[in-house]
Picture 1 (tube, one colour):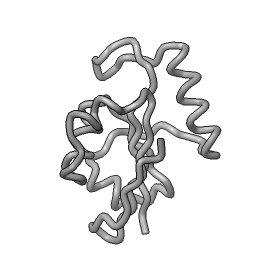
Picture 2 (tube, helix red, strand yellow):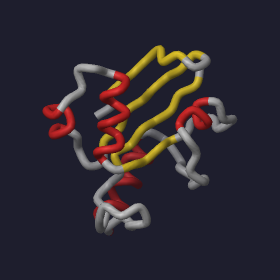
Picture 3 (cartoon, one colour):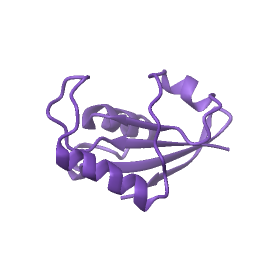
Picture 4 (cartoon, one colour):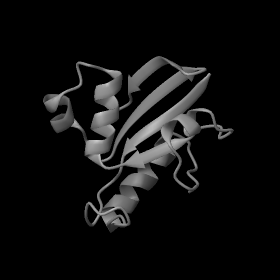
Length: 109
């Protein structure tokens, strides 16, 4: 079974793709990783299907709120505006796949 973590990124300086995290955002990201015994490493972006089929042991995908919400909405039809508004910064989800089929979706925050 393959597990992928989706993270609404921590506080950033803006919405542009190369916007860095603020000092608070860096602490938020470190705290999230440490409290879950993770050691994140940066890798080039890849389409989500390639991530699910990759050899990464525990891929983590960080993105802006609207992108994460779009993925969540595609997975869970009950995920809507209120769930989008309730997303924290950062926010963590776990998706587990068997082959290409999603078998588990968890909101970890």
